[in-house]
Image 1 (cartoon, rainbow, N blue to C red):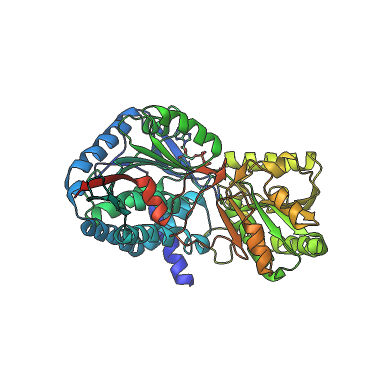
Image 2: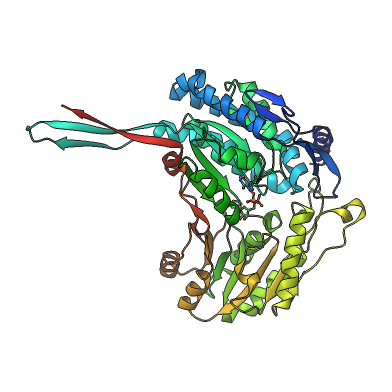
Amino acid sequence: SVQALQGLAQIRVDTARRDAAHFINGEFTQGLTSKGWWENRSPLDNSVIGRVPEGGQAEVDAAVHAARAALDGTWGKMTVAQRTDLLAAVANEIDARFDEFLAAECLDTGKPYSLASHIDIPRGAANFKMFADTVKNVSTETFILDTPDGKSAVNYGLRRPKGLIAVISPWNLPLLLMTWKVGPALACGNTVVVKPSEETPLTATLLGEVMNKVGVPKGVYNVVHGLGPNSAGEFLTQHPLVNGITFTGETRTGEAIMRQAALGVRQVSFELGGKNPAIVFADCDLDKAIEGTMRSAFANCGQVCLGTERVYVERPIFDSFVARMKGDAEALRLGRPEDGATNLGPLISQEHRSKVLSYYKLALEEGATLVTGGGVPDMPGELALGAWVQPTIWTGLKDDARAVNEEIFGPCCHIRPFDTEEEAVRLANSTPYGLAAAVWTENVSRAHRVASKMDVGICWVNSWFLRDLRTAFGGAKQSGIGREGGLHSLEFYTELSNVCIKL
Ligand code: NAD
């Protein structure tokens, strides 16, 4: 309602007054050293939202020591029930402060309230609830071994926390992706130090207030703001007291973190980039395929790791598919988050816009036919200073074009016709990435057949971004290492030991 939106606008202004702060050992601090501050700018209009302190070695050391001490304190002694009750309380408190989280997230990212209120914030709460339930309900393996003396031995698996987990998170779904790691890490009894993206510091900071309010012991959840190389990100991931590193972000950053993790042989869990395909067969339900592909290409202004940037359409429906996508893309409304009619926000930053626009230019140089978009929209008033780009569709690129093979992470896709199922599968699998795929067909045999041939971690059939948090999530090839989700998260966030008892 208009009233609700006015309320949110008010919160937006209040939140805007706040500078971000590190959250270390249960306390907010704006710095122990003098690494300085950076300005957090709104992608909507480039205005200054507030300042963010850059954490250095001193902040990372303080957070790491607080997190280690917490492992030996009250937190480490809690029963599973006490711990999971606390996490349920965290989820409830996020729900209770929903509007504040929503406003903070939209302030940092410029994304529409309509999107963040359905995806980012509810999932932020759900990530705590779901993993609290999971740890209570998962058994470990048991084997009885016959022994040479005619008796036996009982083996059983025992899950213990891994220890201190470093969480390095990106800016595209800040609260959702950060809690996707923090939820299971805490549910398993670990402590965490989070280094949120420098672009989106606010919701990680707000979560500190929630932790204190519900009584999560000091040092269990810590946040240090900073950049990557030679800053908090690097200092944290190479810290010898960190036991495991969970990271979501670009593949190239993953390579750097893996080198840092090699010091002391720490385990990593990586959710990396993608260049995800959709395959649209002529026997699909075209309305659903268009609706799903529109969302997968343009939701969150194309800044979703699972988003579709390559669309392969069976030739008989190619022209009508392209025409409908063009019409729908041109009907997207760019605007402010609180405007109920908005379905596309800006990109995250001016810097990211430069990258996306460089691909818009490159695609044309590589011979693309521009179906729609391709540039910067005319935005009114102060929005003219924001990081806006037009939703863009191309056809006609060669299969080896860089715009078809490299992750752009913007609101754009290339659509190409295909003639056979084998060809579609080959094209879909033709990049070094392997995160997600979407297949659109009403033929159930074909659905299973094609899904089984996709070199990806997640294949959707007749849907996109439909997430069951109990299922395995991760990437194949250069899109990741390991799987998280449900039971799979426990594999990373716990150390499984076998106890063998001779009877
Ligand atoms: P990014 O790799 O630039 O940054 C991610 C985080 O890593 C940030 O917090 C950054 O400060 C930190 N970082 C950078 N260099 C570091 C270093 N040397 N050591 C430690 N930390 C360092 O990614 P981004 O631009 O924030 O996010 C977009 C990328 O994330 C895209 O490639 C997207 O596909 C990917 N992504 C993947 C998934 C997935 O689940 N697979 C989900 C969301 C986003």
